[in-house]
Image 1 (tube, rainbow, N blue to C red):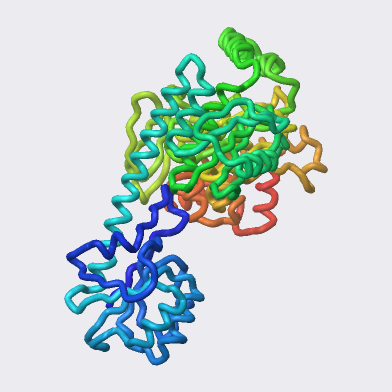
Image 2 (image 1 turned 60 degrees about the vertical axis):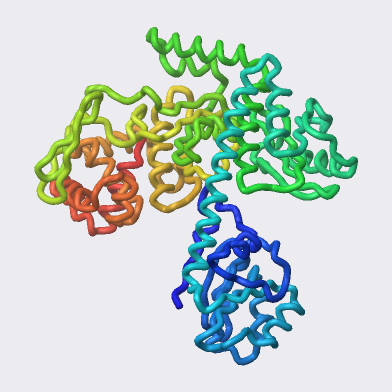
Length: 528
């Protein structure tokens, strides 16, 4: 009998478990419950004919077996229960004509549900039924989340938006939603009243978060017979959203996250004044003011530039990230593409980047690089799908679930373009190394060299290289000469990486396999 593996637990959105009773209710399967309760949740299905399946179980599954190697039913059930399996399904024939009574007694003793699978029902039919039920539950959950998002967005547009959002959230989750102030008092609330014990536990849970920089963004627990959750709002005012419900569905965290974003925006202090300052800074930039001059209107600096990719694909993802990092200064890149720069690469094809360009790439042959085209990390030329944020350097940059972040070193307002390039390179290193957050570091021996001398020498050494070749060499060296990881970081074919590195070696007339050459070039590439 074949086995079916479960989807990865970390997949998003999660598939809700299905109750065993729903499987027993399928007349086409003919399943019969011999022991244990029927209301246990099933997270996945696994088939095993091992004498001891314990090492191969994750917990929460319906374990199916025909008892091929069943010799000690009591010990077998002990191991299955120890592994955390949700239920056991036993197929009769061809090995056993009936379910062994000792197996039934052992399951009854442990309270483990035991299901008899008739000869006419293959294990694959049971597994398929479970996956179909999970698919139906997941679709229902997705619809519920979508409807809740629409309801919350509509509530945020009402005359009294904060109470309206709390009311919509409480209604969608079937509980109570409370907005706590920084001192732990209720600023607003909606939904049904909860017992005093649950109210105290929710207030204490909200106090765990608080306004501490870099502290936890959410917390969960139980109290007064209810499931509790608390979420810190962005804006730095210490506001916290508390939610108390009888149960916690797979999509509840997503729904609450949307409410957190909306409430963060609605409760941000002096929101109108902040927007006016940012609008004024934008106008001054468009009229020719220097970035260093304009940045002073936004804050004293220094600044940290953050590049981010990821999110859950919703319209609120980037705003939620900005709120979590505590900054209103965000660029999603929407409407920023275009331009007249061109870039050609590949064997026989060309690639033009701009408003109406086309692209054709080849895997072999030679490459042609446009000397004036912006490189992948050139300031102001972030890759599509990249969110750029600007934070005061005093604000902690922490890893955010579902996002990959690259952060620059603290830079002055006059060096924001350099910080933008640092963040772009840090993001590519994070993606290549599969790290949630990578920070740009500018310490070590390189800091002992005079900046002006280092810059002059770097310009001389790297003069033969075009922008794309320079960036490819930089990433390739940072990833220890890995062709595959460099291709992933630059989003190009590995053959293109090889062609570019070969071209670099020819133009520089250097042996790139020599560690001394690599070190010298690396210092040159990192020069200011």
